[in-house]
Length: 300
Image (cartoon, rainbow, N blue to C red):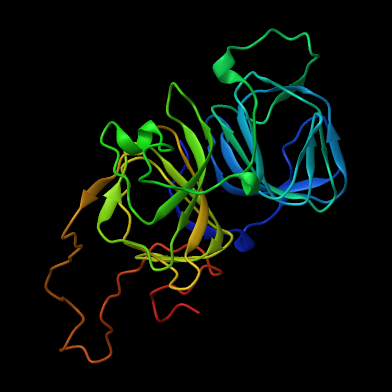
């Protein structure tokens, strides 16, 4: 399974040759998170030159989200904010990418392998067709809007939270797996601790989020396996926050009020009787220099 990443900024990651077999051109990737068991991964890919690849079939469910530049998939042009999802085994049209393009690439349920294939490959079930959306042409809808809300918001214990707006890019009708953009209004706050029965993954696109482990600014990323408690959250007072969110099933919020973490004990060789000693500090698990300071005042 993927490790818990709470949280990292892409500036602190090194670049590797991109895992894009059968492609022609130069591209590098930064590994936001990586499952060493099955090859699932979340990557930020930078195309250093023009890049092309023939049509074929991915070994994994594969998603591309364009951060900047232009991607052409078949006859369709994808600019900033555009997205495609190729479920596992679905024929993906030929790709061409302009130099300087940057994307988020997500692989799920498989590794980087890709097999060139022709248009006569076997047809796939309708629910597994290629999905292409242009989010800049979509309207935001309120998470509490029952006309546009998905079952994840209104069934199975889902908890619609006012002040959030959504652009749904992909949802598997069987598993509930989804990828969507979320915008929080300025000053929006979700104050109790929360956890979920599914993994939760986020990449901050704009604005900022402040919570008990630090601040999420553009380029910050986290991956939480199921059942990891987190919060509370407050969006930036002026700009709010916009982020891409993925979960491997319907998102249900389980809240914990009056939560606290306490440590008790008696000092042995530190404290009032030892003038040179320092009181212990509880470190917050912030992994990234670019994301902000550690709580430890000795951290430089």
